[in-house]
Length: 269
Image (tube, rainbow, N blue to C red; front, side, top):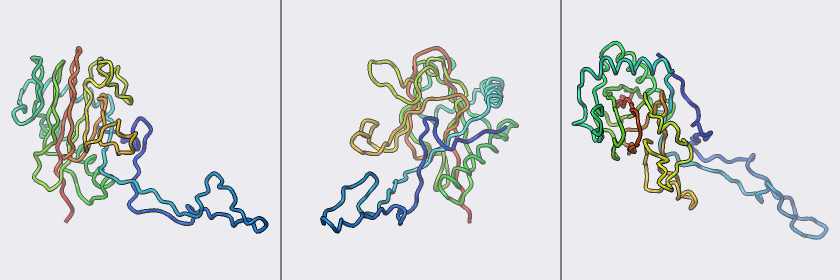
């Protein structure tokens, strides 16, 4: 099994992570001296900042990791779920908030990390979680996935706002990988959420929330504190386990299937 990681989101945006203010002579464009002949200040040219030293300091809040499983691994996981996980029918719904109940097949089922497939998945997930901690958080720690469960959602099913617990360490990670996405969700635009005209533009999307401002507040120079993520088969997202998120309902044929995970964070001694 293997996967590739992205260095940027599909919409082309990048993550800026500067720890300190940065300014220096390269940022300083000295104003030319006033003309000796007429004692007049020369006009300001484009790029001239009148001798000021300028620095931009983005305020980092947290990091999200995005990775993609190859299609053959997705097929293997789906086959394992259908032949092993579903027949076992080990229900996880009592300990979870998901409202997956509108179809006879709607379910939240334990995904074992102890059989052959589960052990291989755990190795990959632990590597991804540890990479997240060391690279995304500059934290000398390792990630240990301890819980995994399958979400089988059909028309009308949804997951209200929640965050993940279930870890005994001071910090934790959570995430999920999408394994099946209905056509009614696949056809939606991933980058321009549509709320108007009752068009269902974000049906079945995952909504991440880390503040109280909305996408419209960007026009007032407020920071973005939410994101709507379109589920895509094979895509995995990892984030701190305190991050609030929800899954919006969809209305169409087919199954929206994912595996969700929780990692414990073990800091180096």
